[in-house]
Image 1 (cartoon, rainbow, N blue to C red):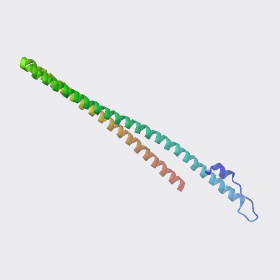
Image 2: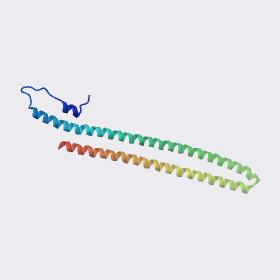
Image 3: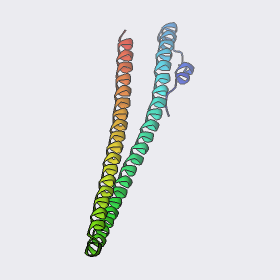
Image 4: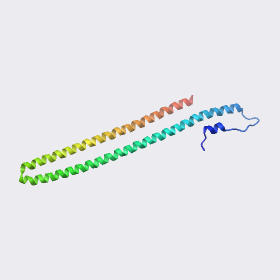
Length: 167
């Protein structure tokens, strides 16, 4: 069972003939109650703060997982798009070779167009990868900054509380 400030305040001792000075004991218990109450409230506040920070961490972890999943999906999509583009380019090249026997000029134009499409798709993939990578890095930096700020804030509060208790 946890000891609360009310438990200390309501504690009564039996009186004895040659016991301690009752006023001194009462004064000491009042001091203990005051200090214990401060610590008790601070402990409750810290528990609330920890709960809040854990909620934030869980949100950031969820966000990080979502971003990672998005990156994986984007990578898979990029790979699929590249494979499709390469397959399409291969088919276009085969058709171009077949048509080259019939019409040499038209086949050259088809090959050039296929290469442009492939280049554009690869360029879009590189841009998409760079944007996602940048977004992830900025999110990680924000998470680290929030964690550093919370740690620094907690360290400062702990140092202030320790110096106040020494007084």
